Amino acid sequence: MICRFLPEAEAEHLEQVHWYEQHLSGLGARYLAAVQQALDRICEAPRRFPVVGTGELRRLSLERFPFTVYYAERAGDILIVAIAAHRRKPGYWSTRV
Image (cartoon, rainbow, N blue to C red; front, side, top):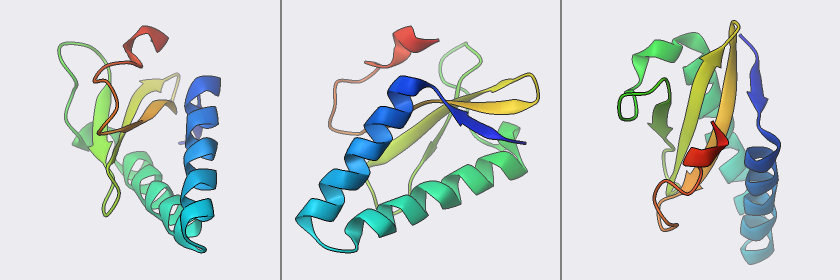
């Protein structure tokens, strides 16, 4: 399976990489590695993780970073809807789907 990002999700993700790297050299790379590990787990078994509400979205929290990946299966691929910060307003990304 291939993971594709919604443009808004990708922009937020790249901003987060930049923010972490500015605050501590190498931290952006560790964040990227945590996201990649989560994406690999999702691609291996996308239905393994809990459904959000009653919809088609699922979620997986990152290890060591306060973010959750929200995604859906679409046409045999994985669509990343958001990599949402735990401190941000809950569900802010829900209008993306």
